[in-house]
Length: 207
Image (cartoon, rainbow, N blue to C red):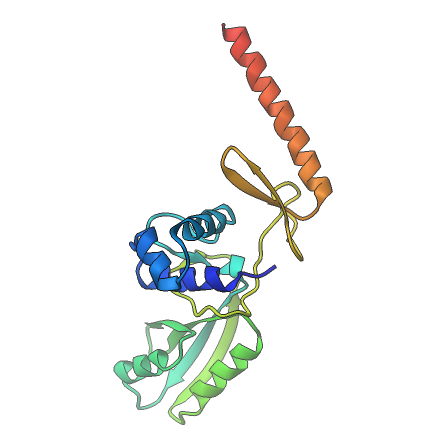
């Protein structure tokens, strides 16, 4: 399951400016306004975007977060920040007490970790002393480099297992739900109908 070209364009534009109207956004990505509305609803239902200011959940689009601990000899903090700005996957640079720095890296393929560390180590005055993957932390980030190879990590609405391949879609009450298989869709629909019936009985008891 992957985002299509229009969805990628929409996310890239919203990361630049989250306040774009749907009409302006449609002009920028060269599709109709109803298409933008439909795509935004889909992205919201999938949990990729939320709120008026767009922040992406990096885990749902296949990104992993790494922290790289670096030692610097003779480099100023400003020069190190120039290094950070030289690579689109680098993020915050934080200085620790005593001199080391922590550099944040977002990747959607392990090879990109090697590319990033090789770039750092090209400078003789910078040395990587440790690197680790961040598992549980705030997942919303303000900007990520997106391309056609971005995978999706969406869980089934019923069994909560990762969806592989194309999801089964079920729309109810104006919201799309995504399932890993038709069995989960049927089980959820049965559960939904039972819940609706119970709500109806409760209303009748009150009356």
